Image 1 (cartoon, rainbow, N blue to C red):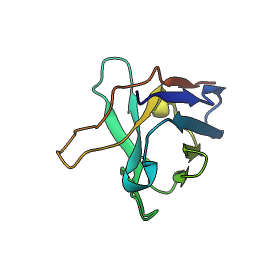
Image 2: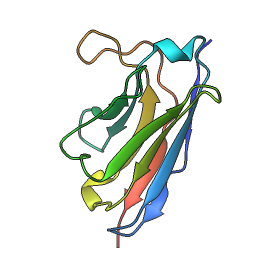
Image 3: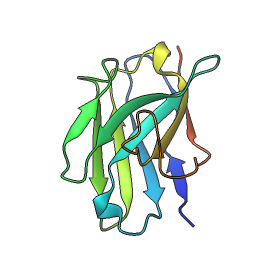
Length: 119
């Protein structure tokens, strides 16, 4: 059974940095695109960053220039390096494997990791 375990969240001041990690127990992980999503209170879950099977990253407008996604297929991890954090980045962050269906994912969600940006 595929499982995602996200970690690395915490409370950080505006302008600070965090590195999120996601352990993804996906068989044949190399063939999947991987992505980070986030859900803020009162808002829908949104795609933050993705990385395809050839290590090409893609970012939402809000993440561009501040976040960096990477993956380690051997260790089955996906990472999100976040810098220049803003209060609007406060959310629970999740990882998953996006499908070709717009907004679709292949697997069940993990528990996520809470990121709180506050002074």
